[in-house]
Length: 428
Image 1: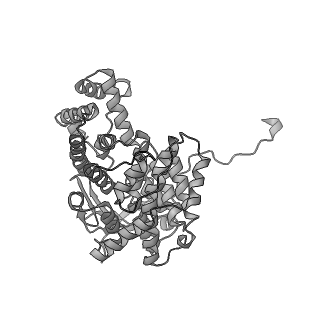
Image 2: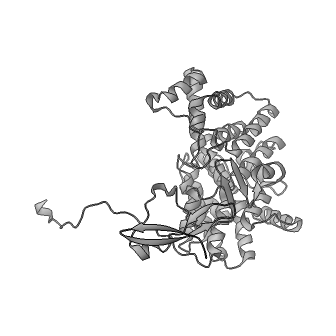
Image 3: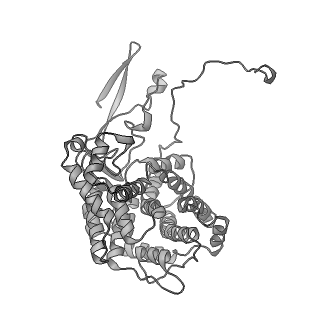
C-alpha cells in the first residue's frame, strides 16, 4: 500500500499520498484536498509548493549541487558546449555526433531573422531597454514562423527550438544595436554560436570584431550555467503560460518579461552597482561589510545568499575562474573584480555571514565576467535570457507532452470586504 500522510481538519482526517522523487525528495499530493475538504493550502511565494513533476534539473541547495538531466554542472562546464547542453536539457540526453552536427547546422542556417522583422525595430526609440525590445521581438518572431505555432511532433519541435535558440541572439544583438543607434549586423556562417553573437554585438561596417577564443569560451560557460535552474520565477511563468496552450514563442517571451525583474535576472546588475558604490565611495570592503551587519541605511550585500542554495552556488566558483581567465588574457585590471574577491574572502571568514549561510551566488561573479567581456550593463539580463532559452523550451516541452497537464489556476485566501452595497454616485 502506498504511503500516505494524514491531516486532520475540523474533526475529519484526510489522507495525502506521499510522492518521492528519484533523489529522495518527499512531497505530499494535495491535488484532491480542496475537492474533499473545501480548504486550500496557503504558501506565499510558493516556497514550499511543488507545481509539477520534472525530469530536467536537480538542485540540492544544502549540498551545493546542480545537475542537468543528472549530469553535474561542473562536468558540463568543463567538457560541453552551450549548443550540446541545450540539446541535453531539451531532449533529456546528450546528442549523438550526427544529431549534434545536424542541430548545429540548423542553428547556423536559421541565424538570420526575416528581413521584415528588422523594420519592427524602427518602432522602438533609441535608448529603449533591450529587455523590453527582446520580449516584444520574440513575440513578433512567432508571426514569421506560423508553421510552429502548433507543435505535435518531436521533429517539428527540433526545428522550432533551433530557430528560437539561434535567432534569440540575433534579436538580442539587434536590440542592443538599436538601443545605441548603431546599424545592425548580419550573422556570419563561419562563426560558432558565441562568436556569432559577439560579432553581431560589436562589429562595425568599418571594423569587424574578431572574438578572442578565451572570451568566447567564457561566454559559452556563462550560457551553460544559465541554461536551466528548476522552477524559478521565469521558468514557472513559462510553464504557467504554456499551460493555457500558448505557443512556444509566446511562452518564452513571457519568460523574458519575468526575467527582467531586478530580483531575478537583474540581480547581477545590482552586484555591479554595489561594487561601483564601494569603489567610488572610497570605503574598504571590510567597512562595507560592517555596515551590512549593522543594517546601516538598509545596505545589503548583493550577490550573496540564494532562495535555494544554503551552501556555495556551484556556478559561482566556475564563473569566478572564468572572469580571472578573461582579465588575464586581455591584460585587464578590474578594480570591481578586486573588490568582489576581497568581499568574498572576508565574508566567508565572518561568522555573521557563515551562520546565515550567505555564500556567493552566480550573480556575484556573472556581472564581473560580462563586464570583462565588454557586455554593457543593460545587456546583462539579455545574456541571461539567451542562456535560459533552452530551459524554457524544455519546460514548455515537458508541460506540453504531459497527458495530465491542465491549465494552471492557483487558489487564494480572500481577505477583502464581505458583501458590500453599491452606493449611487450622488450619495458618495
